[in-house]
Amino acid sequence: MIEEFKEIIKDVSETHFAALSAGMLMFIRNNTFADSYSKADKALYYVKQNGKNSYSFYNQIQYGNEFNNATDLKQIAKSLQNSGSYTGALNLEFREFTRHYEYIHQLMVRNHSCCYLVMVTMETVQDALPYIEEIEEALTHMGEAIHNNIRKVDVCTRYSAMQYLIILSHPAETQIPNIMSRIFMEYYKLQDSQHFTPSYEYISMKNEKPESI
Image (cartoon, rainbow, N blue to C red; front, top):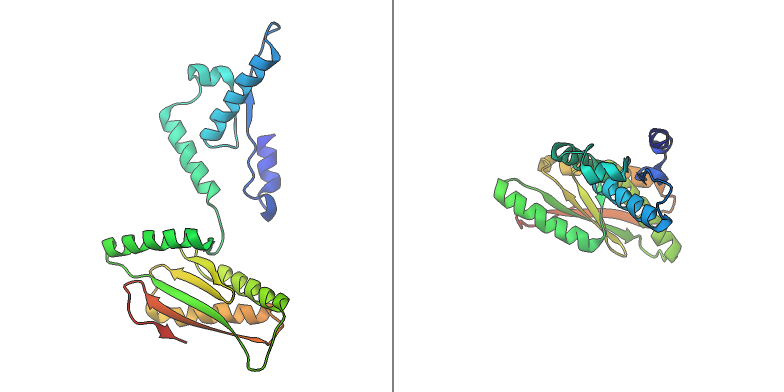
């Protein structure tokens, strides 16, 4: 049943991260419902702590017949990888983005590498007064374009009503215009309204002077 469940959801984006787990108990006639339910729940909790998408009987976790430390660690690693699966950029809320920024900055300093912080601004064309729905639509399309055109190791967030921030991890600086060109080209394919002109500037996370485009 679990294998069939995995097959059903693997290509459905809305349920891609769903997991099916089960805890079970072989009970005898004199077992009470409350005691049986509690033990099955403990078995379920054990499965959730050891990779999910599996099942276990209560007696197996009680006596340790099925799992060992090496197996547990492999299951945990697989669970972390599956739980963190995503395509395109990692899109974070701003507070999480700031924590991620600091973490990357510390790694960059330690490893003597270079990352870039990019700010994308949606500027309104002269004399245009777009409705709030148009603004949100434009920002949504820009977010999609960003998400689809930067790598899995990159990170983005909605920064303000008209801006996005992107962390590009270890690119050649000469590639930044190409990356942004791809993003803007996809944005223009998605967005019908001509009320907005996207622009960007970037700065090395070594605190160099920003470059405006």
